Image 1 (cartoon, rainbow, N blue to C red):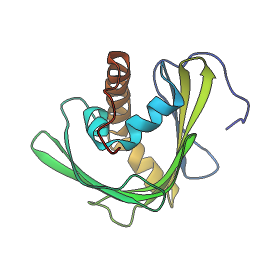
Image 2 (image 1 turned 45 degrees about the vertical axis):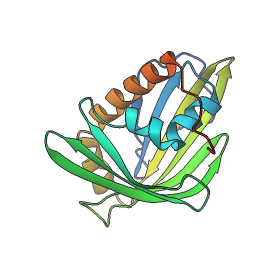
Image 3 (image 1 turned 30 degrees about the vertical axis):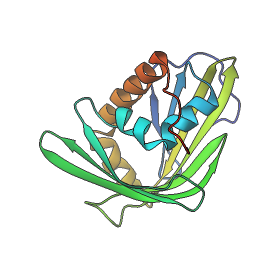
Amino acid sequence: MSSTMNTAWIATAQIEADPTVPVIWITRDFAATPAQLLRAHTDPELFVQWVGPEGTRTEISHWDARTGGSWRYVSTLGGQDFVFYGCFHQIRPDRIVQTFTYEGEPDGVALETARFEELAEGHTRLRVQSLVDSFEARDAWLRSGMETGVHDGYAKLDALLRAGLPAPAAGA
């Protein structure tokens, strides 16, 4: 992946598989500031509103969004529960580094880095890098319906941001 920033607007998520390492790259632009995107990724009340495919209901089991914290949530779609968990390794204004595990495949831990790159006033490019332990695991993720979850989730996030994020909860 080039380190040169492409300045063309990316209105839908681009999902790419790196041919040399087992990485999935996701890139998407939002009409939001990096701080707004960071909050949408770390505030559990906002996160449950946009994560996953259309029709998904998500409930937080545990959420400690800080460097060294951890998280766990259950997403229900079509009457089936999907449980995910991980650790926040680092949360900074410009990025989140975390692990991501689907409970149905506990050996399939991904290391994810989400970067919030300010493009212009009020616009941010989100770049997510998910590193898994094998090309087989990466390709299984790509076949799993991940693309639908990414596109639907980011469309819901876009709508949430356009509507305006509510004021942070007291003590947040």
